[in-house]
Length: 557
Image 1 (spheres, rainbow, N blue to C red):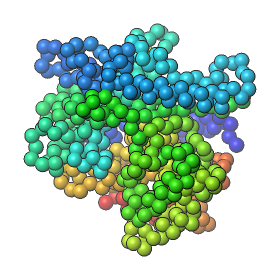
Image 2 (cartoon, rainbow, N blue to C red):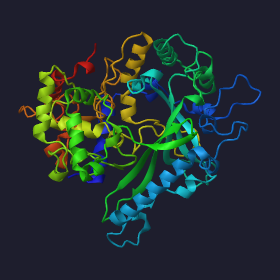
Image 3 (cartoon, one colour):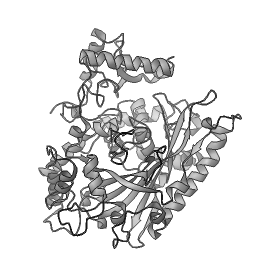
Image 4 (cartoon, rainbow, N blue to C red):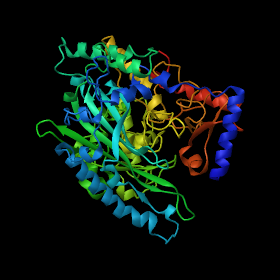
């Protein structure tokens, strides 16, 4: 088994080899998010600032004060000591406090008290709620994402636009980090019902056109902020009245590696819907976050979920990634643990619900026999499945559709959008990567959906697994870490024919091979694309074999 030091050395050597050989293809994240997301740090700084009084050319502000409907009579930045005493935010504060306390009670004993350790660095480090609620922190705008790909959830509003804010210190000391491990998504309806449009289709087409018009725009900074908010810009129609909900993701606990404990970081994820009548945020279930603990404790509920999900029409939506699980099966909070790795474990949110897992069979909701029968029934009914072609594919999708499972896959820690950093000093440790490989890899699919809206076509809302993007005919990701290049997730395709049909297309680019280690190599056969001894002729043969099994949606149209 690789030690961390040897693995790091191997990675550095592989990177150097790739750079020298030219096999490592590099693509700018900005070029891949054009027309679907806003990541320019200076433009976001301008958009975060309050509207400059007396300056009609200034970009309209998208700071937390305005977007959450706080007092707009002042231009002051809204600090957290004022944010969390707003009547609308009190339920949020109460729910966070309750869940952090529950986490601490459960995990302090599990992670820190097994054995006395005088080294405080190995103790569980909890999220600092006092700092969160103080006037020393605030939420700064670090990204804006077009999520019209979610119009299958809210067709009447053409999907969503998400404003992503990062928790930051207001006046940090020289030895303190500016950015803190928490994000808040303010989710808005993509359309404003007050806008004069002839139809819903026309409204969707207009929004898509505005966003796609920015794809090749070369402006940056202040000029870009003004372009985004001018009458024809993609942000011109956004208004606080379109508020739907807020989504929180915070690093609730951190366990540094020691001689007796493994490194682990846990993230708490929460969702709060905005009640427009009561003018407050109410705790809500997380979309598709199946409540495993409640299912295990309730045999009737577990059987009900299995019967519902295995119906052909639901199985098809499950395969396409457009399934919406009824709320009675869902959790209102979840802990995402990282790093989760490739091997099945209880760190995965739905571990053990499929009987093929190594968990307690008494906990299982789905048997291998039932899944195989459901797949056959779907095929007999003419349902063509593109992703779930095996029991392993079903099990992976069960984790994949959850908030926690998605954030465990190709994330940056537990985040998919840590955000553009415009607050750290240029001489400090500036985060240059605003988004995760999963986020970047999903942009071609999202852009294809915007193109469909713009041209009046019916969009294809399907998506692949979080580990591998749908390219939709876009070749920009080929050979990169976002698809099949160095560091991409892959499946070890073998010549003996024992390959899983759900993952056979997960091959590596020419010159790379799928490297698997430990238990993941023996069972899951999941790994990462690196330069290795098996790269070359055999690797290319495996790649060709995998491409034959590629889904039609992943091929150039």
